[in-house]
Length: 115
Image: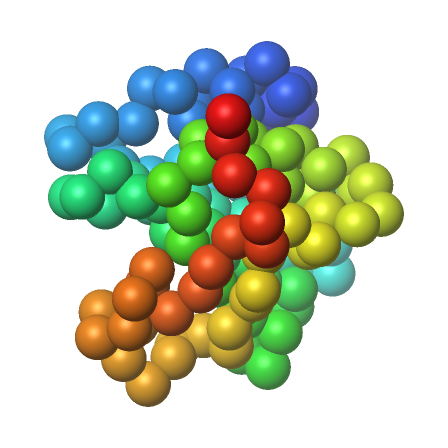
């Protein structure tokens, strides 16, 4: 557990994801409840699920990407509450009817591929 993570902490944690350590979760400790968070999950195929929740089940969304750069950028923008942090992805309500049956886990990058 890291108190008050920085963008460099987030970069190190995301870069350190492995099949034995698949999750990074950051919670907003200043929120009105403990259901304000963002998390990343490393899938077996090397893609990442990215998920955020803003207080309750109605504000719980997910997307996926193979771009660690975009995952880091979005995570960091969310961490610092920067405008536009949702803009790099198409977000789906959680849970989707069948995330595993859809290409790209039911979501796609919005044309901002890692080069």
